[in-house]
Length: 324
Length: 99
Image (tube, rainbow over all chains, first blue to last red; front, side, top):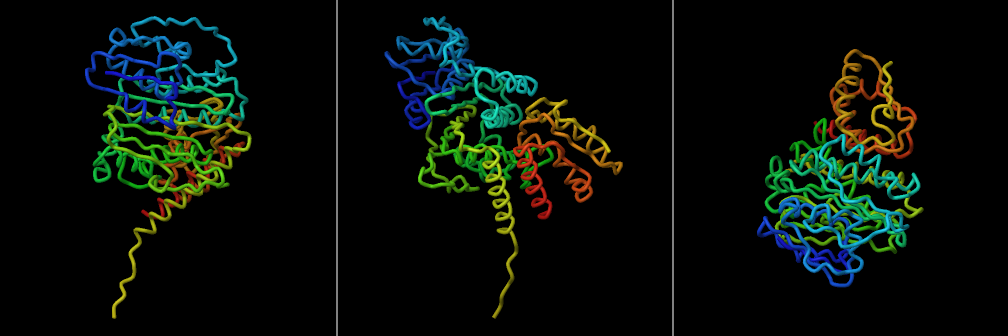
């Protein structure tokens, strides 16, 4: 397997990193990198860890790691998953150290502990952290509950002070969204991208074909997360199998971005020809601006969700039969 | 009246669905079965996930319908928590109407 890190591996231009991936030869994983500078979204680091776990630590190595900014990889804990020790020396208490290092979560007890422990690492005021807890809580729970991944969920995050944004990644090597959805929604899971799009629809759960879900699952989680990103005008991406759905940034001139139940109606990009990844990666950028009131955001999502359910129900109404 | 303190069960942020399931099956459903009201107290809870609230109350509401809607009460909710509970109530009742 191969991956190449560059100077700008953000969600905005995720295709460059994705296209560098090579999942063949599962017993050997080589990570190449730009010789001078690295900027890598934490989500892509979680994907590297998933690949390293597949290959085995002893079979995972860097090729010519010389970038001076590579100490970021050390701070995030990537060298815990590679055969090489870190070549970098880092100061542990730098101001820039607002990050959640690569962490493996395998069950709900570990999840709850992680959510409690992670916030102090970010050095953020309490009112800024509910959205982060919400997002990580829902996404990690999805992995634990639906992915059937032996390796659990790999989580990492990094806070960027200048943009007041936290970038989050959660990855697993489980069954993938297509297989998860195909049990009850086979006709909507003929391809990876169609399965991802269907999983984003409100009220659609992989655990039942009943709209509105079961006693355990509503099929609302991913729609809520996508909507949080959308209202805050941030990127959101899902990569599973060969499919990638990416929510693009909303026009800043639009005061209140409209929430669409159908992800097809959102400003997005999608593809179904990505290098095949056995598992699921979810990446999100969350801006923590003062103006973004999480309660108002939840209220908007609630209204959009209710409207979506009502409209889908209405679409099933039988129409009167008019005759001449 | 049966009282549940969410903060005592899960801490400041409620996301553990396993605990929600336990509260649902061991306390909420048995209480409603006996006709007893249940007060769910969110004092000290700064946030919840939608999936936690769904796992906590979806089955009781679907099972006991109006009786659950009348006998379940939520105390000391922050605005965030209220919005999530309202969302779950709305989509549950919409889906029940469709059944």
